[in-house]
Structures are given as structure tokens and as C-alpha cells.
Length: 307
Image (cartoon, rainbow, N blue to C red; front, top):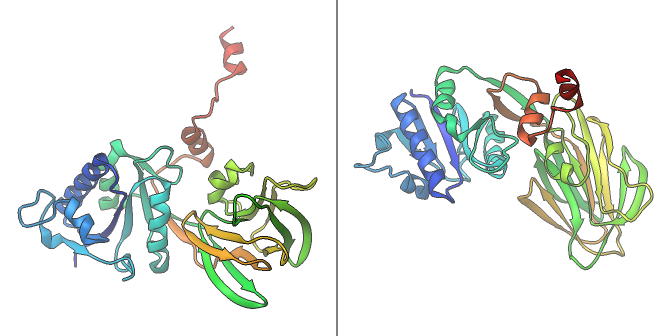
């Protein structure tokens, strides 16, 4: 049986389609079967009897709701972090690792850039890569003591005000003990992976991936004590919405949304099922941080040594 890879691509630009065709050709030449999410993806890859992307028998078209990653060796992602997060949603149930190639702007979660497609595919073919598990969040919403919704997140779960004109009155509780209540735009609970995403933009700290912790970040809170908090991976974070206040919305990884009525309770704890990410980068996280954010690391020490 041939080795299989699920290809997930954001086909919004011609350059993305060109990259997808190149990847398809490379995997086909290596004898892989490429799994594609929809017939539309297959069409833009020009996969037909006269197509230039390889033997059509080496492609399988699957639907989103059919556990598309099951049986695949990994999920190969072409796009930015948003595309990778959507791919992680498909890969997580089958515990298939995800490899991202950045076709967007920063692509912090991506492991390779678009100018290294051939080398990246070669590393997959040769199995010269590592796989690491990333912590996730399990999120439960209850209303009047009854379960209202269950979902999960790799980056963050954000509880935010439901309307632009109103503030959200929220109470933060850690491990059953109230910490602070205030009016705010929202409250974010992020993993170490998500600490460089939305939580970072909201003023939260960067957490190294091997630190097992949760970060809680109030957003535009009207309170004296509204600082980011880093708590244990074993902690349970609860955000209660004032029953006499306005509505809210829960958003996980920017794509799974739950409307929250007044009085809703959102409970967040470390997830039971991790996301597995492929790693080609052999350096420490510090070097990745400097590279991705293009941080200035040359300063007075270099100037002093030259003098």
C-alpha cells in the first residue's frame, strides 16, 4: 500500500495553486497517494486524465466530515497560520502530525517557507523529521448548570463581548477560587503555542512550548488588577458572564464560535488530545522567535566590540 499525505491548501492566490501543483508532482513522483479535501481542490490542481500533476489514480478526494486524515502519514499544509489551524482540526482526531509551509505573512506555526518546497517534500519522503506534541485546551460552556457546548483549541479560547457597543462583565475563577471581576472587551485563555498569537497581541507573555502552563489575558479590562496570569497546566480556568449583563461569544482558534447568553459559564482546562506538529527546525525556540519576529539582536555589545 502506498504512503498517503493529506494536502490542505488555501487556494486564494495563483501562487498558492502553483505551490500545490508542485507539491502534488513531487509526491506523485515519489509514489505517494495524495489525499485532497474536495473536488474543487482536485480541479485547481489540474488532476485529470490529461493533467500535469501526476497519475490521477494517485489522488483520493475526501470530504471534510469523513475523517480525511485517517490513514494519512501526515497533513501537508500550504498557507498561513489560519490554514494550519484548520488543518489541525482535521488531523487531531486521527492523531496525524501536521507540517506547515508558509505562504502567508509570518506563519509562526509553519516549519518551512515556500522557497523550500522540494526540500520539505524530500524530508517527508525520507522521514527525516521530528514530531512534537502541543498542548490543547478543552472548553465547556454551561448555562443554568447544563452543558451548552463543548469545543477545543490549539491556540486560544477567547470570551468576548457579543456587541461592539456594550462591555462584557466577567468573573475569572482559577481552580474554583474567584480572582477578579471587571468589565472588559474579553478574556483570553491561551496555550504556550497560542502565546505568540492573539494573546501576544493582547499584551500577554510569550511562553516557551515546553512550559506546561496556561496564560489568561484580560482584554481592555476596566480594573486595577487586570494583568496577564500564567497558571499551571493542571488548573481549571472559568469565565462567568454576568447574568444581568450583555451577551458574549466564545471563539476558539478564530474559527469555532459559540454564542454566549448572559449567565453563561466557560470552563477551560488542558486538553485530553494534543496536536502533533512536524518539526524540521533543529534550533531552539529562541532562534525561531528571533527569526519569525525579525527581532533586533545586534546592539550595544557589537558596537562596543567594534570600537
